[in-house]
Image (cartoon, rainbow, N blue to C red; front, side, top):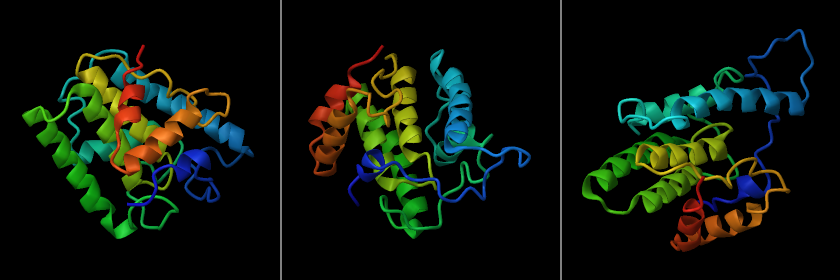
Amino acid sequence: MKNSTKSIEHATPIDDISGLKLSSSKMYTMSDIYEEEANNILQATLKYLSAIPTKKEAPFAYSWLLLLHEEMFGQVWEWAGKLRHTELSIGVKAYLVPMELKKLSDDIVYWRANKTFDTIETATRIHHRAVQIHPFQNGNGRWSRMLANIYMRQNGLMPVKWQEDLLSKENKKRDAYIEALKKADGGDYGDLILMHGVTY
């Protein structure tokens, strides 16, 4: 798979707003759009992280992986929860996205059933694989980090706190996160696992 850090170093630009659901009677700046996204994501955060989500609420099944993205971005974008059909500078080829996402879902079921990894490492691997696949037109990083936090919350741990506003250069963990992702691309998950251990 391609390097999983490009979208963090240079966030995927929103250069096509044709799928924007917001009112056409107002001119929206990119700052306005990000604010609307943040409000939408907050609703998903409250739903899944304010209390421990059940396995019925967050089953980590293929269809739920799509639903979560829709819940995070569906009030803002038409393409929310829909797999991309175009190539990005990061992620697997578009035609491989459905298969790779299904493999991730199946792996999560296997890891959980067989206790392959502890909770933090499982969350880390979910996060990293989701970033590598990059299944959606945009919002992949935020969705991937939400997946990890939901898994941790569901398994008795609190969410990771350094992930807030990760694209901001003011986030002191940003550079460390980029380096940890690069190492994970090469199979060394150590630093990324340690970062997922820093929770509320």
